[in-house]
Structures are given as structure tokens and as C-alpha cells.
Image (cartoon, rainbow, N blue to C red; front, top):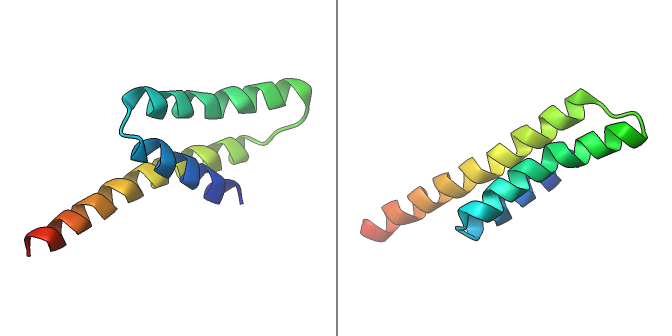
Length: 74
């Protein structure tokens, strides 16, 4: 569920095509984990999964855009 949520955040941040929103989302993920670590027990594996999910969402958007562009010119 964490991977899916982070992938969705990455995908939607990338769809805005605004560099500030992509950077803000990328910085908020570790910040939220830091706050969670202050108030309770968190897993570094969860942070790794969230970061990988965010990056997967961004890469997925780029691949989908390239795929659509390929079919548009064919």
C-alpha cells in the first residue's frame, strides 16, 4: 500500500509539470518519515519503499508520455 501511494504521489506530481511541486513532494516524503520517527517507531525499509515508489511514478509518467508520442507519430 505504501508503494502504491508513493507511486500515485509521484505520478500526480509529475502530471502537474511543475518542478516546484515535484521537488516539494520529493522533500515531503522523508520529512514525514522524520516526524513519524520522532513520535514513534518507523522502518527505514518503509522510507526506501516510499522513495522507490515516488521515483517509479515519475519514471512511469515519462515512459507513458514517450509511448503515447511514439503512437502519435506512427
